[in-house]
Length: 317
Image (tube, rainbow, N blue to C red; front, side, top):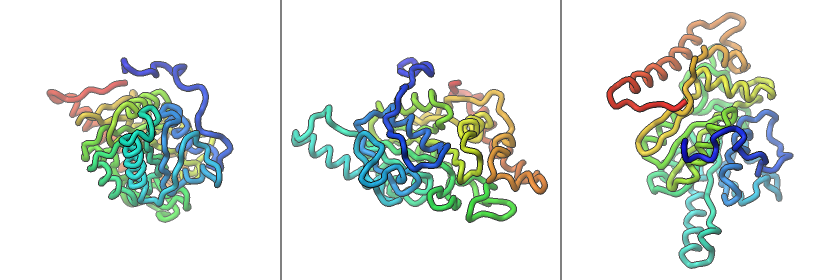
C-alpha cells in the first residue's frame, strides 16, 4: 500500500471519464464499478465489449468511452483483444506509432461470458501470456436477457430459470481460483461499494503486464430484485458478511485486502434481495439458510487455518 496513489478517499478521481446518459438500469452495480475502473485506467484503452448488459452503453454511432470501443460476440472478446494487441505490436515495431501512443486492450464482459461461454477462449489467452486486462462485472446471472441462471449464480438464488421453492440448486463457480490456477500476472475481486480497495487494485493491474483479471461484484436491482437506492448498501453487506471476499492473487500468493470484523450473518444480505425472498416466506427455510451460512463460515475458517499454519500468508485490513 506504500506505493499507491490512493491512500484516502479524497485521493480518488473527482470526475468520471465515462459519459453519462446511457440506457443502463438505475442502481447498476456493474456501471458503478466501471465508472471507477475507467477513471484509474485512463483514456488510453481499447474496450473489447462482449455481448451483455454493458453493450447497452454504446448506441450507434456513439459510445460513452473517451477512447476506443469494439463489440464482440459473447465468447470472442479475448480473441478480439489478441488481434488488437498483435496489431498494436506490429505498428510499434514498424514505427507507425510511438510507445507513448500505445493502447491497453481491456476485455469487458459479464459473468455469462467470463464464467461460462468465453472461458475456453480466455484460458487460451492466458496460456499465450496475452498482455490484456479482463474486467468481469458479475451480476450472477444472464442479466441482459432476463436473469437466467449462470455459472456465477449463488446457491438458492431464484432466477427466471430456477424458480422452484429451493431456487438455484448449483453452486457459484470460483472464477478467481480458475484464473489463479493459470498463474497469470494478477487476479483481484472488487465491488463498487468499496472504492478505495477497487482503485488500489486497478492501479496495481495497470502497472503490470500479462493476463490480469478484475472481478467486480455487480449488485443488480432488476435481476436481484431490490430498490436501486440500496445498491451500495448491498455491496457493502456482501463484504461485511463474507459472501464476497476482497482479495488479490499475485506471484503465486493470495492476499485478502479487507477482512470482515466482525463478520455479519449472511441473513442480513439475503433479506435485502427479492431473489432470496423464498427463504423467508411463506416460512423460513432453515436448511437452505444453514447451507449458505455454513459455506461462508467454511471459507473463512479455512483461511484462518492457513494463516495460523507455519509460513501461512497474512491479510491486510
